[in-house]
Image (cartoon, rainbow, N blue to C red):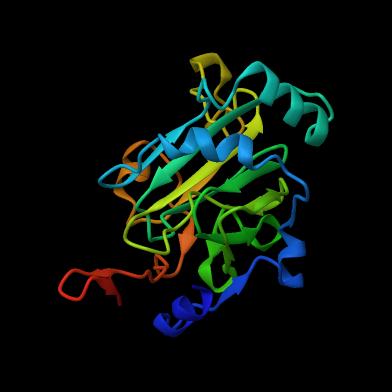
Length: 229
């Protein structure tokens, strides 16, 4: 799949997450209990359009799973286990949190990542952006210094991804919790948007991404031949 994506991409270099260059952004989580998530996510559909992000999904965020992941990977701090499924292919925006995020690839997917050290005056130039291919079955931890957002699909069927974060991340801020920080968008969510992402901008997100709204190529079904192109 990665070879196919690389051939379809004229400008974007897509690197396997196993590559040492990923170590600046995170690490692969070894011996992760992937099977505990795959059965649950099989029954959760990909939306027809756009993305659907749920901060905490009851079946994923069961007591036993939550306690296991919390103890094994978060030093027993409180966490939430949700998911992001969708048809996204563009950058759209970049966010960061205080605390690592674990993504579990239920399908193959591509992540567009940046580093917080490459931000200047609340802006990020897409020249610094890196694209990483994450195969189905991989769990990866992204450090709090890593800029990221929703995955991108690698086929027209979309993507499925389990998202694990410190508890209450990405939930709404109460009025008294807001600050003068222009990037603080939700609880434990600092966000910069691309100006083409009208929904983010309409909600007051800071349009701080400089450069093109990066597109990730994907494999399509060819109905006439029953195969992929």
